[in-house]
Length: 196
Ligand code: GTP
Ligand code: MG
Image (cartoon, rainbow, N blue to C red; front, side, top):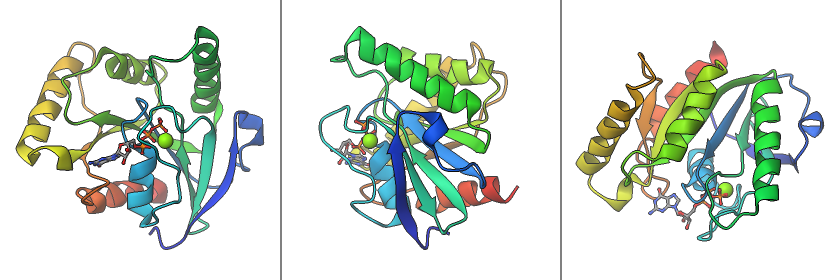
């Protein structure tokens, strides 16, 4: 698992993504939440996915091949305020095409900042996934920035907010790209997804 991770291709067009001949898992979430960093942590490869302190770093659909057995996909984030209406509409089109049409996509991991109270934009996005019957998991990020207990409290609040629209919860994990917290749990989850 994650023995060998290599970059394959970046693009804005789902027609140009690699042939859908193996399972695929995508990471999405607000800009700056830590999607690219988490990919690097899981792959134990620092510069694999490009990260940045400034939001909006990842702009394309990025495919990484893991052990030549499955694809891990880094997607551009949502909710970055300094984005034009046109760019936002383009993002929505690209992401909805990718998520709704990518036939080998097994699960969408939605990353959420573990330091924050439930955010409307995250809830709206996961509700949209639910309405479209897309399998998802929630990965709370940046656990190292506070106590684990505090992170768990924010997860509990998020679950409470989800109860308005969800009667069962997706898999939920807590992680830190900085400390490696959650690596085993996330790896085991992904392994189960791609093997079934
Ligand atoms: P976009 O591509 O812009 O959507 O952002 P992203 O979600 O890919 O975030 P990225 O991985 O680039 O990380 C954003 C910032 O958060 C960087 O400065 C990272 O170093 C920092 N960061 C990411 N994950 C963690 C974490 O687990 N702990 C800490 N302390 N910082 C983190
Ligand atoms: Mg990124």
